[in-house]
Length: 124
Image (cartoon, rainbow, N blue to C red; front, side, top):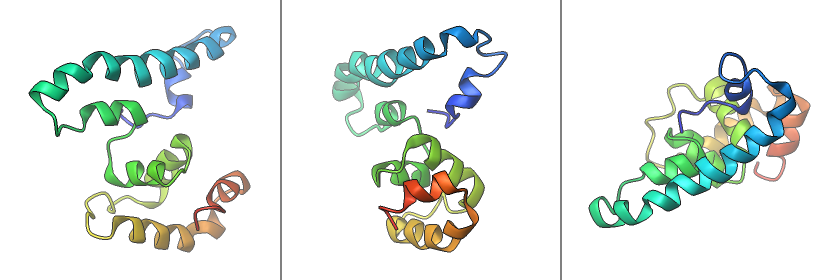
């Protein structure tokens, strides 16, 4: 939820056993991204039905720009990278957020690496 990339999560001192990276990623996806929200959902449905906290845990992002990019089917890691690199100051835009993101992505598409361009081709 804190918008840390998998590289940051799996790096020392958080995780120092390279042999178990696949196990750690599976744990993050199964238990944290899926399990914790499912466990807490009944409580939130009763106490705070409009709270977005569980959704933030599921998608691993809380900033509006990062969340919107993930909703546009940009992979989480790429969305977090783009948000940090090209969208500082855009996180408070609520009006026409999707339009603003797409316009900014068009502006920066030539400055991103090949893999990021491939991931953005279907969106812009």
